[in-house]
Image (cartoon, rainbow, N blue to C red; front, side, top):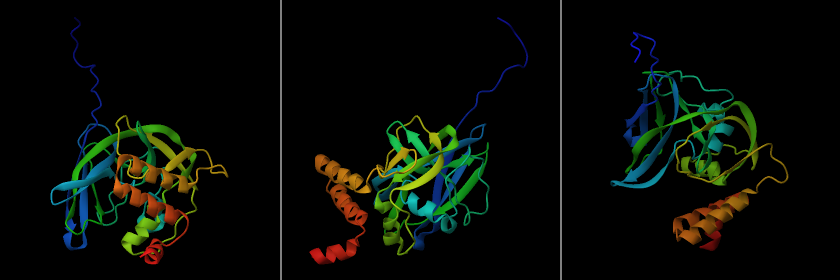
Length: 258
């Protein structure tokens, strides 16, 4: 055994903490608080659920919902797709903070998520709305992600119309939606963990073309999956998705049927 003083390299420790608190409960706005508790700069995605009366009813990664709306209207939301490896987030104040997004590959699928990159011991906070009617965040956890491809690649995103039109319906806005499918460019991040995929959009390598996936097929697959699993809510969501993919107003269709 060789006894030497010094010369020992410390292992990189990647770990983070996340918590939430009410920022304006009457408006359904929460404040997310992130902290890098490791000894190296690290990137994370936030997986969290939503609960009512102590019962969790959904679980997904922050940014998987409405990412098309956030990116196509980037000036409104202050977010964008990463074009190079992420740097630690700059704190502009909780009311002005907004993280970038990236395409994330996981063992069970590909999705677009918010990316939280923090230096060792750095803390950072942001706001999120939509927690009304007794709904609260639940079981938040930070999942480490690493850069899979540091060079931005061209991708074709055939998205579920709920990713854009669903935001307008929920928020009462009339912001524009991109073509469907639409062409995007992003670096690729990755995680070795399985993560829930809220909406199974089709994000394929290369530019969009006439042979790109038809978003209606995604809706039909959602209906089929709901039938096979006996999930009535998923069937209804698939039908709504199909109606919206055809450019129809779901409210007008319902009025015609009632």
